[in-house]
Image 1 (cartoon, helix red, strand yellow):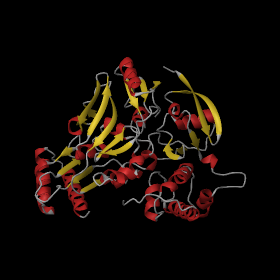
Image 2 (tube, rainbow over the protein chains, first blue to last red):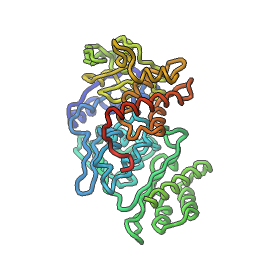
Image 3 (tube, one colour):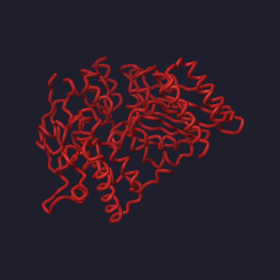
Length: 277
Length: 169
């Protein structure tokens, strides 16, 4: 239950971190809040040879709203987002602050970072789901320079992203939700990893087709449910929603009845929250 | 691979210069190198909260932080709560409310409350329960811990009503 020996490197800037990752090679790992990586190292599920500490890089923890888009620096903690007046009072981003209550507990939220959660890509975590729900753009910097990756293309599956080994997530840009929003998740205990979760954005106007429904618990990565999005846009009843989620889950080949019921329940709950806001 | 790093830690107001291995977690640094054994270590993977300390005033699980990454930061452990005049209000409330039996979780519970109370928005029982749910206790059934934390949270808030952002905003 103790991490294996590892060497430690402290990056002073993003380019310094990229240089370190490139020099040290694929057995190196970026560490920020460490709330996922350290326990994995203690279990020896992860056994990196080198750690590149990015927490001393200045300016990576900012939370800013410009042109209605919310930019969250990779080192911003979950608790900083939860308590951020900028996030709470932004009409199109309030859901992000509300959802932070579901991320672990206070002592986890004070350390864990947004960039870390995105890069770690736990399929049951809240940040990957939020990123896909909002159509966020993840900004990564590597040897080849900086690029923006749409969240929907970032997550490949369980703990897997399309980021290169030399790339570091530096910030995440969230466009505003155009309609009312809701989020629901189910875990065995508060703060546990969710067994299923759903995020919903209602259509921006009556008759608009831009509703979004993203769930975790149906696939290794957060997944949009197209039939359910159409149903939400059409103002479907709970029963009609249930049928549309089932159709989407058939398509995703989710055959576990318990998991299907959980996902359906969370979608209905999230839609209800959005409709009553 | 057993490289060591020289770090500076403020522990309960005292500066320490320590040689640590990169793989050492903060709780091991505190217990083995500083000798501050009030902080308990149990699950070592961030589930139980027994090792909760304050890092720059914020509650954190010291088994999930590498000691080398705490370099230059201020750490507070359970040893910082009491002073010459006696136990602090949280410790008194834990005693009065019978908030411990075996006592193993108590240092972590106390530091969780010490650092968590300023984050409470309305000090309601529900909110205190959510805070306490961060840590495990296998004896008390939690009710008496919630009693003590709720009591102290409301007492401290009435003495210093800091304005916090509303959760429903």
